[in-house]
Image (cartoon, rainbow, N blue to C red; front, side, top):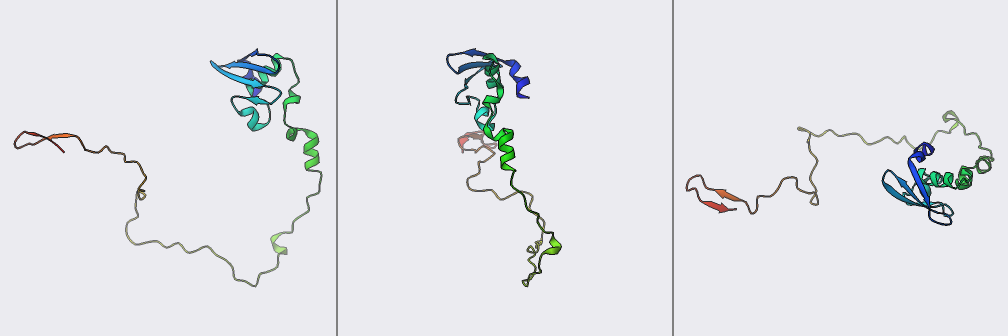
Length: 146
């Protein structure tokens, strides 16, 4: 997905491992040695974003050199090399001398259920206040501020 999106990126080399990548009228800064991109995806997910891929392909480097160690096969095999012991089923568990714990009963209150939640003191009012508005009296036709 990122490799396909990198076709829309246009890198320009800024010296050493620094690149400025134009992607849909937005500039992104990429540092390949630090595995950094200003969009934040390179640091977040651990593999190159489309901007970094464009910079890597521009300099004709190997993509595998910029992927985090946790995504490599050797690390995966090392993590899952230990044995996961089997767990007995529920029928093998011993019965407890304590009583069974059930959730509390739901109490349905009398009356019509409320439609709206209770407003908090910090909630923003949706309607405007009438302070500062002028009103015309229908009897004497004078304007008054409220």
